[in-house]
Each structure stands twice: as structure tokens, then as C-alpha cells.
Image 1 (cartoon, rainbow, N blue to C red):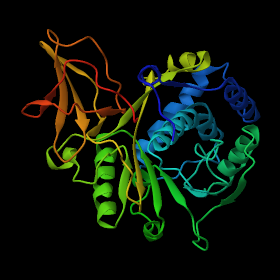
Image 2 (image 1 turned 45 degrees about the vertical axis):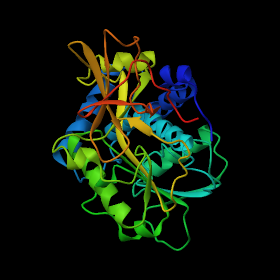
Image 3 (image 1 turned 90 degrees about the horizontal axis):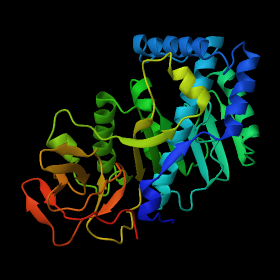
Length: 348
């Protein structure tokens, strides 16, 4: 298990490698698009976004070149960074230890499959042959040498160490029943209120079925955002250093991505070995109020905030999504835990 220092965590951010931008340009050229024409790409992205809004359970129209362009230039880069961030979160808590085979269900272009670490073999389930073709090219480009299989549907004939589901709760009316036979589960969903709360409810069901949360949760108690709020939802945020072509494309889009958000859940039928007591995870952004700053932290079924008075505390920032050590001599003020200096970040 690797551990980040406080300084490393504070500057954690993600970017697209130059070679991925090169690959995207090569693939776009095959279907009549280019990173050099950002306006036309933005139009395909808006069209794809409208499609998802009108058809929440509809399948991505991969046969259409405009849809392929939108996926290559926009959706895949975002999902690739989300996959990187989730793999890192899992590594911090030992989630991936000893897992050799994986299933990426509804894989699309394979954002997890293109991450060259951890696994010996993988199975990608993607109903679109067009998406499969581009995904195969991507794995060759990334130099993935593990054994990979693509299928249009899943038939459970061999044991799988971990199953990864991206946007399944959003796109499927119900989950496939076989998932409860898999001992390790990963879910990635949009960072919307509805999707986030749907994922939080799934967490409760999985705990009843014998699973333990590894991330973002640090406990197996009831989710405080479910039992103490009717509108809060859990989601993460990472910084994104966008390449120039992306910034040019965004000039024609209403959505900007200086940060990338997502909801996720890592569950395992094995109790986590959390050796350090009094750990929590920062699940909210800093809320600057008159005379103080608050930030939501999750460590049990209580809805709690770290808070620090500006006149008493050192000046510091706490990055959302990170693990944090709660002071043992904590001072409570209702739902607030008062601190005077930056708590230790990360596991140690």
C-alpha cells in the first residue's frame, strides 16, 4: 500500500498524457473529425448530452460518427481520469490487493482497462462492436499486455475477482442478479444528486448482503447523508489540468471542467484492516462562513463537520476526498469538530 505525504495530496491533480491526445486525433481523423476543429466537436458533445437527457436508459448510438467523436474527444478522457482517481483511492486502502481478474461491465472504450496495473486478465462487456473496435485500439496504444476478452453480453461461467460497473445505476432499470456472487465490487456513477443518493442506497443493501465499504466510506454504519438529510449526496472531486485543445473545445460548451466530479463505491466481502483509529474522509468542499470555515467529514453515522475559527486557527486548505485524522482531544460544538491546525492527511 502506498501512502501520500500531505504536500503530495495537496497538489494532486490529473492530466491527459500527450500520447492519448495523439491517439484521439488519429481516431477522429478516421471518422471525419479533428481536434483542430473544436466547434464541430463541441456540437457532437452537445448532441450526445441531449441524447442522454432524452433517453436516460438509451444505449449510446455508437454506429453514428458524431457519437464516436463525442465519446473520443470528451467522455472517454473524463472517464479515464475518473478511473485513475478511483484506482488511486482503492490503492490507498488496499482494495486491489491480490485481485488478478476483473470484469468491466458496460465498458465502452474501457477507461479502467486502459490503466496498466494490478490485473493479469480482464473481461470487457460492451454490446457495441464499434466501441469494442476502438477500445481494442486503445489497449494496443497503451501497451496493455494482459489477457483481454471482449463480449457483447456476460455469461457467468468462471469466477471473477472484481467487477467494475460504470454508470450502471443510471443506464439500467435494475442490476443483474449475479453481481452478488462477486466478492469485490466497484461502482462509478455521475455526481448528480439522484445518482449519488441511488448509490448510497445501494451501499446499504450491499452491507446487508455481507459487503464492507472500503472507499469512500471509512465505516459500515448507516450513511449519515441518507439518514440525516433528504438532499445531500456523496461525491468526489479531482483537479483537471486540461490540454490546450480541450480548453479550445470548451469555449463552445456550457460545461467547464477545471475539476472532474464523480460518485463511486468500493465494496468487498472482507473486513477492511483500518489500523489507524479516528480516521474520517472529507466528503465536502470548504464552506467559508463569517468568522469560520466548515468542511463535512464522514467517519460514522453522524453528519459532522470539521470547523476552524479564523481568529484562532492557522490558514490552511483541506482537499475534498482525502482521508484525515480526527484529533483525539476533539472539541465538539454540536455537529462541528473544532480544530486549530491542519489535521494529518492520508493514511500512515
